[in-house]
Amino acid sequence: MMRIDSHQHFWRYAPPDYRWISDDMAVLKADFLPEHLLPTLQRHDMHGTILVQACSDIAETQWLLKLAEQTEFVRAVTGWVDLASPQLAAQLDTLAHPLLRGIRHQVQDEPSPTQWLSDAAVSAGVRLIQQQGYVYEILVTHRHLADAAQFAARHDRHALVLDHFGKPDLSQGAAHWAKQIAPLAALPHVSCKISGLLTEPRPAGVTLNDLLPYFDVVLEAFGSERLMFGSDWPVCLLAGHEANPWTLCEQATAALSADEQAAIYGGTACALYRLQEKRLQETRNESASAK
Image (tube, rainbow, N blue to C red; front, side):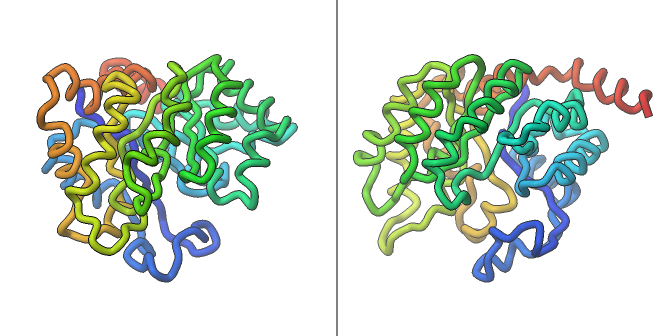
């Protein structure tokens, strides 16, 4: 089984494109490209990644797809389209590519995530991408998990993936968050990326060991077959050199069976995003020959 990092980003940093990178995230105000990530993947024995959008712009997705063609370890791309646009079908035609397997919108950055998640035009857009077989990744914080659960219940024609544990409020503790996440976890078409936890606001005195109960919660709620590891590189660099997502996840999953670990470290991602090494090489060749 391939070991997959289900969540990482690349960008050539330009402030207008990545407004979410604030002044206190100075380490991210740089270019992050495949050659920067490769040594880390090799160090942690990761065989491939899912490359995820970080900018709400079709041009970025087109660039990511071109970069993915040239980068052997990128197994799939989650891109961006304007789900509420009347021209959505045309946008999807423009982006059509064998490595495009998912779509994401940064709902957490909307003025009203609640309104966006219930918008009729957005709902029509999600129905279309599900009909076309794309995974939709839900990016919200703990404040909108209830809205996300209602959204997910309405869109069950294809797989949905909750990013970054649903961004729990670490000041409230894992037991409180377990209640928040339960409605989403109860939906069998929803999976969860165990990613991003290290960069959530951490109250004073909360240690890395205090994060382990959050892994216990998702294991109980989703089961290993609906969980996938993601580093959230390079955003994970905000946590500093003393903490990294690979070590934290290894610690949290050490007591699991080999089958459970295989699901989290690749099996779930391979199933949801249709990752097959032989087919991947063929699609790269097809894309290259078409140019």
